[in-house]
Length: 313
Image (cartoon, rainbow, N blue to C red; front, side, top):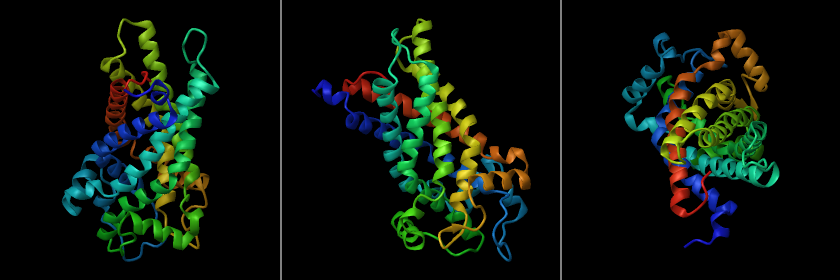
């Protein structure tokens, strides 16, 4: 039997949340790959002479993109980049969940009636998401670059990265340690907004349901809470996610991006060249992924907390 101190410790809860995230990421990863490909569609390259996709390939929808990847590159390519994605979630989800609970229990603290105010949950979600994403940004950068390799080959471009280790080495050799945090600003902005939607919404909805209805702290309540958190997280995070993906995928020279000077420049150019709705490219697959990801994650997380004897989230 695990001691109470260990059950409630940062490391123990970190391990539980990281494990739950690995399960959720593995199950829903193809939707993340589809989302990344959709967000790059329509982007004006640095030099497109001689290498371009057909018009039909450039503007596919969510389902057509997924099917196209499976047909043109192979079904296994739907999991291309999953290794750094799992590395990222071990750091990101482990950190964000643990930081959020630490802020909730030790910094902002619950109100006298046992509830956690919406403003406290919102601020805690923002801070926890930003901190977790900053720590995991290098793995996210490698994941995005590996996800685009299949499309680069179809365009006739040379292979950029071979595997996770090669991608890390290449970035370090070309841009140094700082290069591993390319795109970290929009990355952190996105994570802060997503976690505002995910953690704050889940926490608030769950405890509202428990206090205002006769539903118990079980899978029904967890399912309803995760459904709400997935929708809000997708709406909050998609614009920053588009910017993050484009900045991370752009070609670089001497460690500097050739297409965008920063997140604001990327946002302005994207809206100017492709219209306002371009910043919501990939919203459907982001939501379609966040909904099952959130469901799998929260159900797994709450269940293993219960099985390990740790208090409910």
